[in-house]
Amino acid sequence: MEKDSEKTSLYSSSEHVAGDRLLTFDEIRTSLMVIAESSMFRWHNETSMSLSYRIRTSSMLLMLSLVNIHSHSIGAIIFSFFLPLHFYFALYRNVPAAQPIDAAVFLIYFVGVASCFAVSAAFHTSGSHSQAVHRKYNRADCCGIVLLMWGASLASIHFAFNCDARMRSLHCATGCITFILGPMFIRPEYRTLRALTYLSLGLFAIVFIVHGMYLHGFTLQRRRLSLEWMGLMALLNILGCSAYAFRSKFPGKFDFVGASHQIMHVAVLAAGLVHYHGLSKALLETRGELRPACQS
Image (cartoon, rainbow, N blue to C red):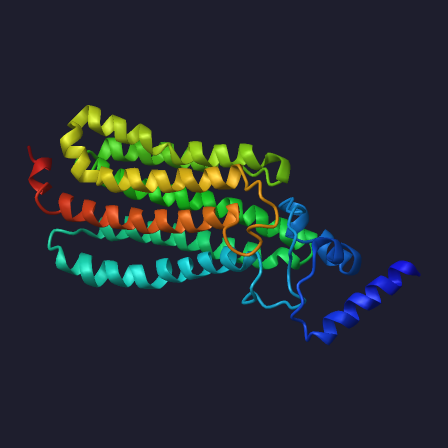
């Protein structure tokens, strides 16, 4: 009876403030146990939060997942619409030596990144749904990350071995096998291991970068791969993985903005944009001044 009266008082107070009152996690545990137990609180082990969701369901509310959802929903729109248009009208049409295979690898990159961001946004939106649905989206989120890294690696390999079809095929095949075997452990206790595995998959790029420099020299590969931009992309991804694996130790301080997961989302979005800029420069170099290098 006492618990029932607590629930009634919580609901009546929330109605009194027209749904604008923020609840603590303990209040959610008392009054909305079914939702809380099946939501991202359990699967992300975020019980240290002092503030939580408003008593509404729209993803546009000011809540912990606002940045998580919309950083990647906006990113999905950018990579599925705006950047493809920019690539076609600003790059592909203005580079006479550009080939259909160049457009194909950029398309693979756009699809991989946009799919990853779209699934990520859907995963965070599903946080208050049933446990079964949330698990499915969590697995899809893991697959999306692997797809993003696969597409990014294929695009870079294409320019790294622009003149060597055999080496290009070898590294593409190796990359496919590596990313197909990507991690699927989604439980909270595997958080650090999962982040380190994703980081190791991303660092697969070191293999073909070093191999390319061994075959063709640093100066040529630096221009083919836009290594400065590749390095910046790697730093952003490492920052994101570090924030994801080693979460903030200040519960209650970053409930809405500045949480470690949000830092990871923004870092990954920035890394995707930086990588696109690097690939664009690689296209201009390999189909421009470096084009005669294939005949030498």
